[in-house]
Image (cartoon, rainbow, N blue to C red; front, top):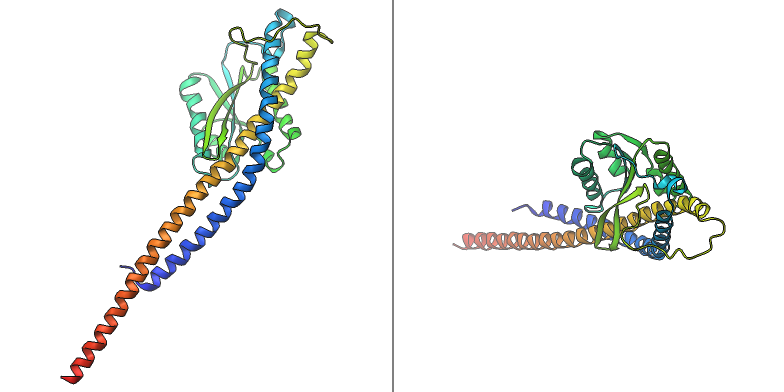
Length: 286
């Protein structure tokens, strides 16, 4: 059994760790509330805009079709992997790395797969084995629509100039504080509407339908990427809050266990001292 000094040192260390994880949990909880409100308010607008433009794009044919809707043979794929700049968030970052690996190992086998990374943690791992054409981790320092729009414009340029035939986004979709869903979405080309889920086209368009699509598609794509990053941002704080909550609980349990060991060791030490005193006194009287 460890001596009393070692136990006191471990109790102090665990208590200090518990205070840190508890503080991190509260910070993440505060940030999560703001991030959750932002993504919850944004989702309906982004989803409806994407649905509308997919339907409008599907109605355009031949030369009128948008350059962002061009379906071509996929030989070169650009994967946008969105994670975090910091760790201590459970499996948040590792799930994105696994999801990215799933794409080039099982989905796009034999294709050229390159990456745009958003988050230092995913960039550190992916850059060791694959080509990272751009690292946009600094966007988390000032997460605004304008900064994300600049990234989206680069992705659109990669597609329209033929550098890549497909652009996909991998990110953690926020469900609740304890659950984040690894999601893979096709960013470009614009995915055509399946089945009969098309918008009613019995409208008079002013300006023309083609002009509306050409003007709104870039905005829609920027909004789609911003939503994905916002989703990931909220998921990060949810994952970190959950991880720190579990770490605090574990530290509390370990501290209580160490305190019990310390009290038992101290009691045993006092008992031994009493026995020694009693034994010494009996020896003197005999």
